Amino acid sequence: MMLTRSDRWRLVTLIIIACAGVVIATMSGQGDLLRLSEAPTRSAATASAWPAESSRPGPRQRHGSMAVTFLATADTHFGYQVTASDEDEGLPRTVEEARGIEKVHLEVIADLNHIDGRPYPSALGGKVGKPLGLLIAGDLTEYGTPSAWARFEAYYGLTGKDGLLHYPVFETIGNHDKYFGFFVKRRVAERHGSVRYSWDWQDLHIACLGEAPDDEDLAWLAKDLQAQGRDVGVVLYFHFPLKGPFSRNWFGDGDYREKLRTVIDGYRVLGIFHGHYHASGTYQWHGYDVYNLGSAKHRWQSFAVVQVTDERFTVASWNYQRKAWWWWHDKPIFDAPGKPRRWLSSSAALIRGSTGRASRP
Image (cartoon, rainbow, N blue to C red; front, side, top):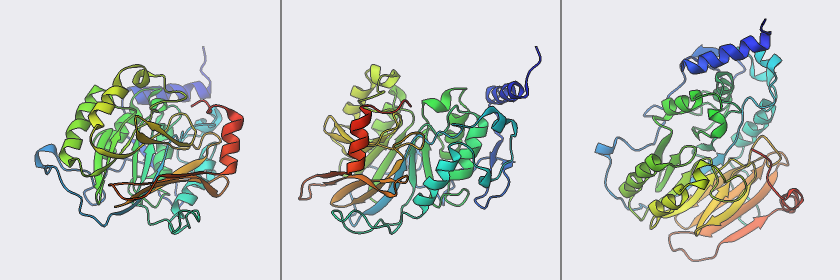
């Protein structure tokens, strides 16, 4: 049977994945043509992860005067709504030739790059501080193909200087990234040393746990938290949710969630972030505050702005489609006085009430 041009392209793509190719396309943020090169890796100058286990210090105390701002999103789904004819054109392409969901990401990145200094809702007061980086909680691509990964890297980069985004990126994988193999998983591991990794921003410790923590990840997390001690604020993020829509999967149907609860018990886990079911909001899981991040793929088009001080932990969701704050949650931490506060915009409440459930991931 004679193969069509589209069939030949897909066959070549699958062969590339099967061979675990390491050549991938990246591009500059100036609209240059994509060029084939090795993907960037995080250097000592841009990484803030812990050193090797043997040289890691013991449990530590907070220094105080913490003022950390970072951004978080999920489900970028590069490759979504890109047709076979688009893929047939292959690489290189310019940023101006954005197709499908790439058009949304031009809007996302523009708002991410200009969030610094934006006034918070009046009830919170103040302005957004300069973000230290962007967390992305999985489903970076629609099908895990090299071409989609190349577009992700071209738009978001790694260091804040090699893509369109002005901040360092700390991404993890999701289920969509494994549809056609482990190409994306390998690329993430090459960029950060592993698909699970951790680092510090001042007194705040952040741990990335991949798609979701299995037994090996949980054993790693137990050691990682033990090295921090119980007085340090911790943020966790991964792809799958802890409860609610689309939480039935290998992580949700097993005993991993209960094991995670055991591992983090007694530590100051300030927040847990995830993606997967393309909604946006906050809920509690065994007393821990969990934040579901928006998606570029469906109608919950938002990202989170997180501010952490010695006394408060604040998560505010910015809707880049409506150009407005979507919801926020603010709470005291480290035994500071005060009570948690929540706010949900009327438009967000309307969409939540009318859909009844989240869009399919």
